[in-house]
Length: 96
Image 1 (cartoon, rainbow, N blue to C red):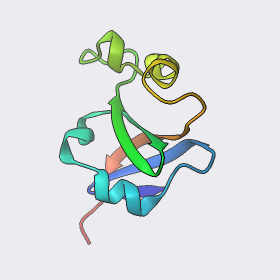
Image 2 (cartoon, rainbow, N blue to C red):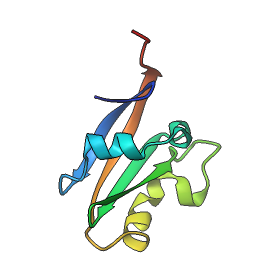
Image 3 (cartoon, one colour):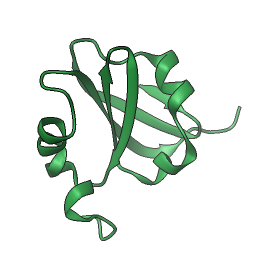
């Protein structure tokens, strides 16, 4: 389990060990909290984050549904780049 802000995430894909907690925390912004998934791709040490919704989410458009992820990785990312996918888990982290 990965905690970012008040949300919990599960790392469901980590191609070429792309996930780096320090980089993600430095790059993460509140806008990403609304998404069901966060994908990160790394090119030459630079991390980009993009949010995706569940396919049945009414807020989802074709380009930000999770079933669009493979097209995104193919068309918008460098071929074979290191990447990861975080899936938001139910509930929020309780304040301690």
